[in-house]
Length: 314
Image 1 (cartoon, rainbow, N blue to C red):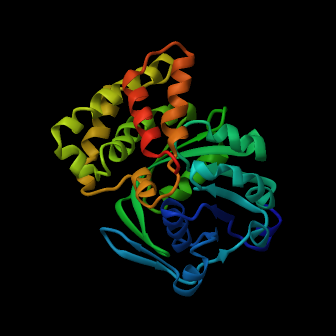
Image 2: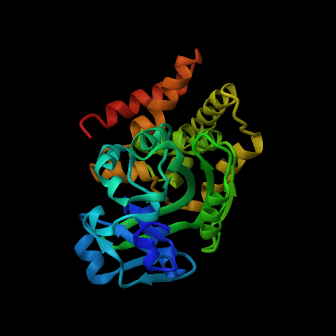
Image 3: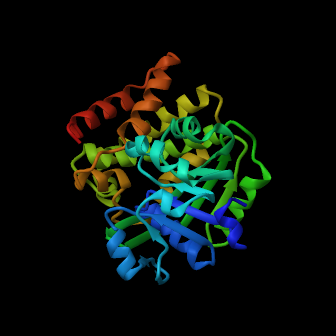
């Protein structure tokens, strides 16, 4: 245990980036008895006053009071840091992470796209870093209120640059305890490419084709026809790098989407709110890596160009 966690029999968990996913998983873990400490900024006053509300299909859950803090130094060293910050804000991690690190602290990034583990390893050390991919549908309706469309979802866990370890399996078991379907892999990079199979077309087309939720995107035959070719292109690049992407997996990504209803992907939510979109981590970095390997990805290149135009100045 780290210094602060020694005061409690429960491992201490810090949530950095308390948006929809960070608040959702942090609140669910806290409601299950974990010692969760949220780093909040704009929502700090609202959450301290009224707690966190999770509106899910099966129930409305409330966490009140919330261990909410304005600065990482107020939290101190913890056992586990959940990084749910948007990749567009990663530069802030240079200041946010160090006060949270004790001797054995693990940093688990829940971020999208490629390159996040490498960036965090440069701050915290590669030996601390793990990653998790979140297959979940949640949005932040207002300060302190999270709406779940597809919860508690699924998570795939992996160590950065190493096979799975007992510490990672213990973390995955904690999430399994709140109902998440967990999978622990020895190859995190493979899982990162697999998640791009959904994120590249659905997050990207939602913005580039005029601000569409997934139901409206699929209802338009011309736009829906763009989805599978984009998936196949990303899958082809992943396979070139030696990662497995099966036809069954691609089909599962297509089949799950209609059941999400009028779901606004996270990138669309950011775009409509005037926030910076995770353009480089989700579309730019995989495109650059593929092109550096001599692969042609015309559909991804065209979508990336559309997104650059749509998000110029954001």
